[in-house]
Length: 399
Image 1 (tube, rainbow, N blue to C red):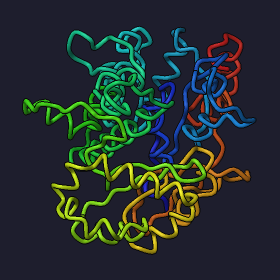
Image 2: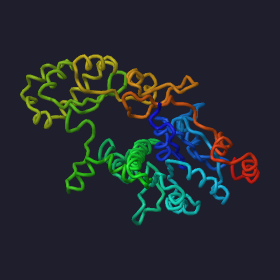
Image 3: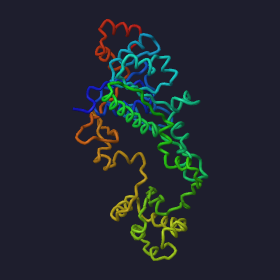
Image 4: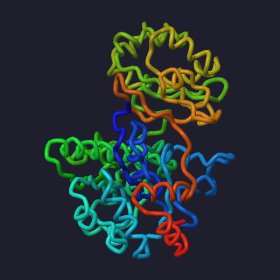
């Protein structure tokens, strides 16, 4: 039996962060109903068609973010559509939305309206900038509210002289959705004790600064920041990234230097450096990091990445390949660790939710719904008879 079997969840969100929380509940057995507007549906459906996005026959963002859900298309601008939503919410355990706060009131799906219908309802609210303050109504995406506003965009640039670094689609949305999932599970636990639901929430702004927590806390403590130098002048040669003979990159992350410095130098074919008094201590290696980087650059150019990978692995050193997206489908460890799993009914792999509960199986990832694919089924389960369903379709309230 799945952990959340019998739990009824309504996903009334768009794009990624809020729907991801519903996806995670569905991974552990919840019955998730995805509400979309008739016509084009959730804008996440067309994300792969935007300029610059990877091209494939698969609607990859949709199949990942909305797997195992049932779909109903409702025109929530119509009073009869709102009445349908209210009946579904009255029977639900969890309602998830990231609609703008003003839109929620306009469409009669704000917390006060739905909680009055169902005192056990857990109402999960996701916003760009929070629900209080001068910018609460400001729209935001992960590129803006999570990535740029948090300081991450500035801090990860290659050096202080280059432009800020662009993020990638969903980079902040997916971890933010995990935060909303955690809030929902907390409220469900509280409900087990009190018998009553609650409103919970999260935001892109809060998750962005949380992801940037180390540097953010430093700023809050009044720290003075050192501008990031170019790679060739990095502060630590043993924590630098290097280009191999085949043009691929490796990132070294050697922390236990007293133990691993001689091992690394030997791997590089530079055992002479260990006996060199200029590099005898960590402080001296830091002070002369540019010299060491220049010498290691020459060493790394003598072998391809996979050769270095075998050598460094055998030596027990901490490093990693700087993977390109095309490397991921063939990543053996991701498959064997259950990070990449088969999509049911397909030869395509998909990405598993990033946590497990020992002894509990996740629901195998299945297809994501078409627009309104399960409308009639969901309406029947909610108590609408055939005549009522036909009337809703004729009035174009439900599609």
